[in-house]
Structures are given as C-alpha cells and as structure tokens.
Length: 315
Image 1: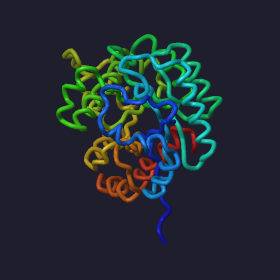
Image 2 (image 1 turned 60 degrees about the horizontal axis):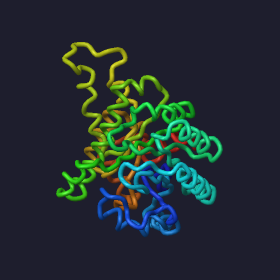
Image 3 (image 1 turned 120 degrees about the vertical axis):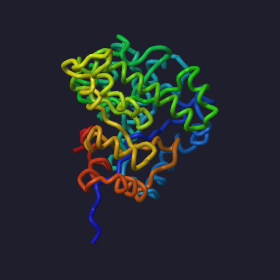
Image 4 (image 1 turned 60 degrees about the vertical axis):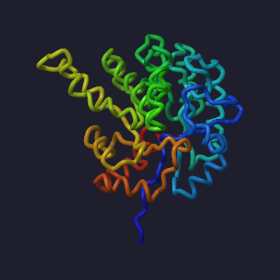
C-alpha cells in the first residue's frame, strides 16, 4: 500500500479576476505574463490543471503592481475588491484554495485596516506586498502600519518582486531569467532594508516569505554581522533576522532547495512556483526535486504542505 503523502500546496501561485486586469500588462513584464493571461484569469481552468498535475491546494495572490502602471499607487478600493473575491473563492473551494490578501504596503493606516479586515473578517491567511515602489523599499515609514498589523495578527507577509526601473531593461536582453534576476534583486534589497533598519527587530513576530529568486539575501547574513569591519556582531546580530525568513522553492532546483533547507531549516521552506506565469509544478516533479535535495521524509512533508498549513493557520 502506498503511503499517504502530505497535501501538496503551491504557496506562490496567482489568480486575477478579468475585471481587475488592464488591457495590457504594465511595463516591465515579460512575454510570459502575457502568455499566461488566459490561465491567470480562469479559476475553473486552474482547478482542472491542478487536478492533472496532482496539486492539492494553491494559495491565491494578486500583487498590486501587476494591475497599475510602474510607480503608480493602486486605488484604495482595489485591495478590498480583490480580497472580497479571494474570500468568496476560498469559501467556494475550501479544500482546494487558500489566499493572501492584496495589500498596498505604502498605504499607511488605511492599508493596515484592510490587513485587519482581510485576516480577521474575511479569514485570509496572510498578505501579499509589493517589495518596492519607485525608490522606496519596505523600510519606508509609511509601511510601518501594515507591517505592524501583520505582525500583531501573526499573518505571514509574502514580499513579492516588482520590476525595477532601468535595471529590468538592463537585464532583459538575458531573457526571462534576466528579468527574474532584476525582480528578485529588488525584493532581496527590500528585505535587506528591513534587516538593516531594525524593522525585523522592532516586530519580532513578523513572518516574511520571499521567493527563491530573492534568496541572494541569505548569502549576506554573515557579511551583515561583520559589516564595517567589526570583529563581533551586534546583539542581536543581523543574521538572526535573516534566519527568520521563509523561502519558496521557485525553480525546483535540488541544489538550491538543499541550500535553503541547510540555511533556514526545512520548517522555513515552502513549495512555490509562480504558476501560471511559470510552468505548473507536478506532484511527481516536486517529489523528485525534494528527494534529490536529500530531504528526510519529515522534511519533505513540511516543505510539501505542512509549513503552508501552519503559516496560514490551517493546522
């Protein structure tokens, strides 16, 4: 008899209601986003594709930067529309869908109130934030109310990449991977700003999740401890905040997954793909990647879905 596996949950997966989508995606997006539009906006097709791939559940998210022009502030009402729709979808498919509320991190107190409504009234398990807007990162003072609200509610914060002006065009000649590198670097820099400015220390219960393309921040933990040539790190050391991060498996490279598990622990790694912008992960493919990474059975179960259930308060 085959052993029953922990449900496979894709933490990094998107859905957009057609009513939210602009006629053309904002600048800085790759052809992959345009090609995925039909699947991105069709919940029935997504559920059917999940069945075929062996994905038990997915976590809905709709980063606001994909719905407005570069550097533009999203309308206040847009977050509420998205979050209400997500709550209805989760209610309709409670065994298949989870969701992260779409929140404008630069929206101050009004955005913080939407965090509280989305989590406490709508029952959404966490929030999705754009990592930057223009020259501002998440350490900007106007982001504090949102981060404080998420920390107080125990709601995980998924720091989603955006396309940085200039740098995205600079790397675009290197194809889709070049664009992802630009976006991932912007998100890593935003998380670095949280660490260096003491935001993570100010909110010790803050749960931050990053995509694997932003995992370069993990490489700098030791360097931060000894920044400026100091022999002894401060107390607490900056590396402690970095070790609190969670990271998804986007890319599904066994060596990269092994690095993330060794650095953060299996309890801080989540299956996540960026589907349907990227190819859909399959049950077989995920198991192969986790086995090739050398994970134990308990570690594999945690990464496959146990950690997502825990973070989103489903178990």
